[in-house]
Image (cartoon, rainbow, N blue to C red; front, side, top):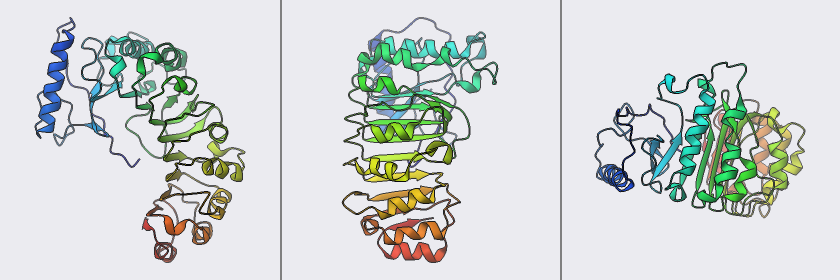
Amino acid sequence: MMDRIRLVRTRERGAWRGRAPARLLARRAAGRVAAVARGEVPSGMSTAASGEVIRYLDQILEFYDPTFGLALPEQLAYVVSLAGTASDAWDDAPEAAWAARLGALLRDPLAPRLRTLILQDCSEHTIDGLDIPFDLSDPLPLLRRHAGRLARLERLYIGVFPPALPPTRGFCQGVGPALARLPGLERLDMLGERGWELLPKAGHPRLRALTMHVAEPDDDPVLALEKAVFPALARLDLWLGDAVLQDAEPAAVVDALARMPALRELALRGLESTALLAELAARDGEALRLTSLALTHAPALDDDALGELLAAPWLSRLARLDLCGTAVSDGLAAELAARGPAVVR
């Protein structure tokens, strides 16, 4: 992914069991945020090995602990995770423990102020890796029940965290049917080897950035994307291996992209379909108004396939063309760059 997201072990918690007053928690959190703004690293803040404070986009990363609750949720990015939690706290049902943590966050008095929520895949903590009780850790019922308390939520991340390409591990338990009840949502990231319930059938009116890196979806997210309406979507980042495309018609996929009037940044990763690339290159500049295109993690795309881009009417409008992980030659890369875009390899 283009955004820098890094994960570290959650900090040690004290033995005190009561919950501090909300004003005290807010003051403590405000002090940490202010110290970071001054370039300091407050005691107890989650940091990387370099001592750098961990951030998600423009927010400081904070692991949710029901004992302490939310503090300054409009400024901190909260993660629901079992990482760094003692295994004896799970008993024999880590999935249920994860869901209980999410439920506590959604019922927190400050949940209506939450801007960013990260639901980290908990399958790595399961007792039996071959028989995972996904119903115990399903976030969809909880999001449906409490979506009204998340009216200010702008960013939602679900699945393997931190992200990695190609998506070869973990699960993304989507909440597509509940997304219509999150009117402020602007960014949605979904990552995992497998996933389901990923997209809302009707689309979303305010969503501006969508990342869907799921290698083996149990449903058909490409078909859902073709039928949904995303009028504000400016950035779309998809893993499009053959298991994702299935029997999708290349023309129908590109038609769906052309129906997104705000789309400017497009990433198609893991692509094996040369037919889809040819269809994309054949569209005129009025149908596709792209300024950035990424075709990465696609060793099957060689000069024969990528050469189609030379005739694309919209090529000269691109500011950036990312071909990392393809089989493009030096000669073709230079030819493409001569048409306008900065070519990254």
